Length: 66
Image (cartoon, rainbow, N blue to C red; front, side):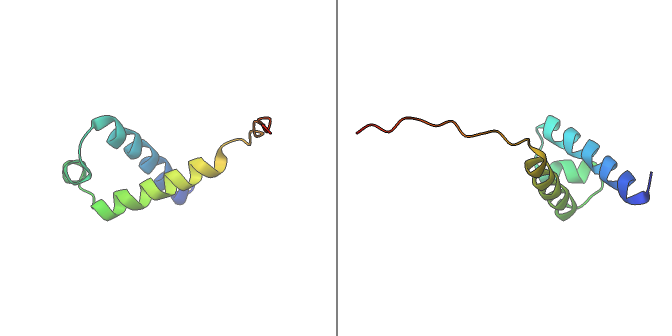
């Protein structure tokens, strides 16, 4: 596993921990020795990645009433 993949895996685990903690970003970052900017960056990347990986679902069509 490359260093880049290891970093992604580390932050994926950290994001799960952060979301489960119920702590504010500032409190969580202080407890885990990272900056709020780092957490925000990885949350952004996780949200961007997860939204692009979602499978396509066909739209549900509703009849038009005239």
